[in-house]
Length: 106
Image 1 (cartoon, one colour):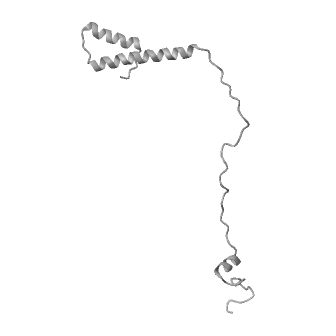
Image 2: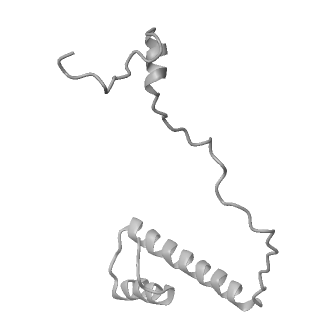
Image 3: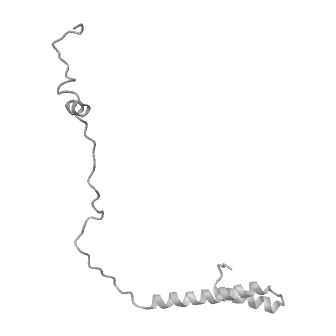
């Protein structure tokens, strides 16, 4: 049972039902009593935490370091030269050179 009532308000609600002679289903009564117990325990634990003096948290930090680890070196693609293509394909050197002195008809 989720409730926005405080433990005293829930206890008054149960007491009122008892005084008026109304019977609550057993599951509902147990759920409300469990809620009263839970909220009371939570309140006590919160109060005990607030009573103690706050300790100042100090952390000594080391020299700043890089947050990311270095990854593998960046790979890139290099275009081959025309002479390298010629060698790979088994053609002689300068096979693809264009002679600019020749006319289109020759």
